Length: 88
Image (tube, rainbow, N blue to C red; front, side):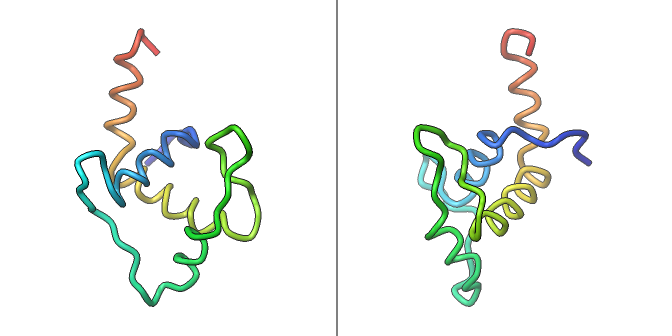
């Protein structure tokens, strides 16, 4: 279990990498019948000049997916990277 919420940047990077990473590998897919998720990903916007999503109608499905992916696939890896970087 997570002891704290991940940083938005870490959660978004982990989620984006599941959908398509730098090597072009796709490890997560959205079923074509999941209209709410598709609409949310298509219409999510970010605060100008940041990687923080605007809170509103479309952020909840994206956040839920991000928390799941982070807890299931990314928390330990990211925690390891963070502790290895200048003691942070």
